[in-house]
Length: 296
Image 1 (cartoon, rainbow, N blue to C red):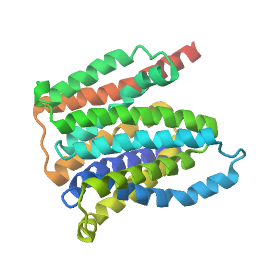
Image 2 (cartoon, rainbow, N blue to C red; image 1 turned 60 degrees about the horizontal axis):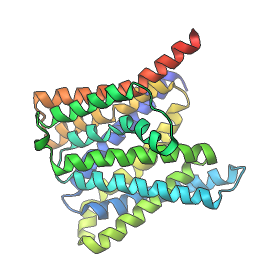
Image 3 (spheres, rainbow, N blue to C red; image 1 turned 180 degrees about the vertical axis):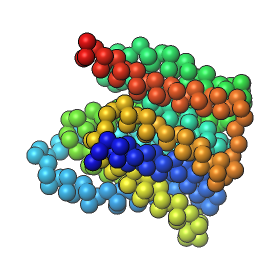
Image 4 (cartoon, helix red, strand yellow; image 1 turned 135 degrees about the horizontal axis):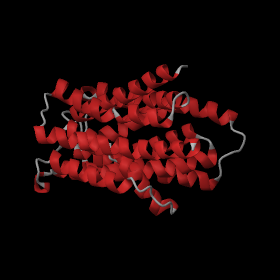
């Protein structure tokens, strides 16, 4: 696969994830957020399981109890992110959700300080300021105008950052990304369904009304897009991969405007641009500095 083809594969993955925001939003016209979480991740678990079996057959070392426990914690972090994002979509727009969720890119190095005691690159601080300014502008120039959904999505981005940090460590230790995916999907499905049974009404009619959204997010956003990301990143540079994967926010906002008729104020567009710039700065600047040091 050429680098151009790999980048197009990553762009397709980002587009699928962007479409997922729309599906998550429209599904809640028929079904509660926790039923949606439980069902979509149950579908995702089933989709990934055959690949986990193949991965396990090729694995040189079996998983330990410690590995399994770490996978479960990753699943709890994923559930935290999925729950706050899905509930947040009840009171925020797809545009806001897609851009604010993307700030996990900025939060990941900060979370690494807590979990891995790894000092952050200096670029994190200006990027964090850019991101905060972007949220301020997206809210119309006043934090008081942020909705509960916006604030929940900020929490969602923090959970995503925790999940990515823990999953990255687990992948390096075990070399079993698909096993991690299946476990975290199963944990999130079980937790979502447990909350839904207690807190939300349900009917077969409601599930039927949201079935296409459930299948889209379960099969494509969780299954196919993950596979495309793994494939694409093998044949391109990390900096180029970051650019194409970060376009998920742009696809989410564009599809929100096209399909749902969402609009953003001119000030809001400036805020979106600043948040997108912060995502790219965090990914690209350290890589550029590293390459320059190697070539010197």
